[in-house]
Structure formats: structure tokens, C-alpha cells
Image (tube, rainbow, N blue to C red):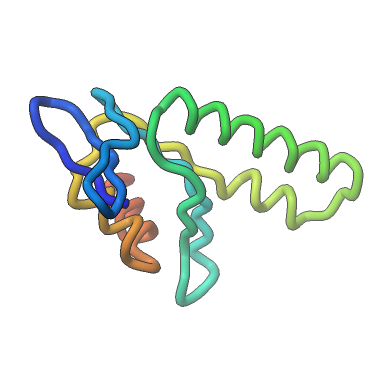
Length: 113
């Protein structure tokens, strides 16, 4: 999958170039855990902001329910490590987040400064 950007719209295309989704904004949900090396972040979902936000909030609710049941700090840590980014994200960064293992952490450090 690759993103393209033209006419102020994002286009998510498959390997044959077929458009799977398009929109004015894009979102990414990822888990950021800088204490783990060498992979400090994991891309979980990307694309339509409405769907990505819904997925992220549902995932967070499941983690919270698991934490309430188990009281395991691992669930609490994952809840706190979730990041949702939405808006006009440079298409080069989007594609690098998908294609390059470990780039999500570099992207997050770049946008969070």
C-alpha cells in the first residue's frame, strides 16, 4: 500500500494502483514505547480518520477492560503508549511509516517537538 497526495487529497492505493480510500485528512494510531529497542513504535492503524479514531478508542477500551480484570501493568503501559495523529501528514512520512520498520518512532519524535 502507498499513499499519494494530489489536489489536496490523500489517496491510499494498493500495489496495482487501485484507490482503496481517499480523503482530505489522514490518521495514524500507533504504540510509542521509547524504552524498547530497536523498535520504539508500532504502527497499528492508518487511513480514514473516522475509522482510525474508532478503532483506536475501541482498542483502548479493550485494554482498559483487560487492566480492570487483571490489574497487569502491561495493559496500563499500552494504554499510556497509544498515540493518535490526525490531519495533514506529509505523504512521504506516511509511506515511510508503512514501509520502514522503526520509522514510526522517528516520525513521532519529529512531530512532537
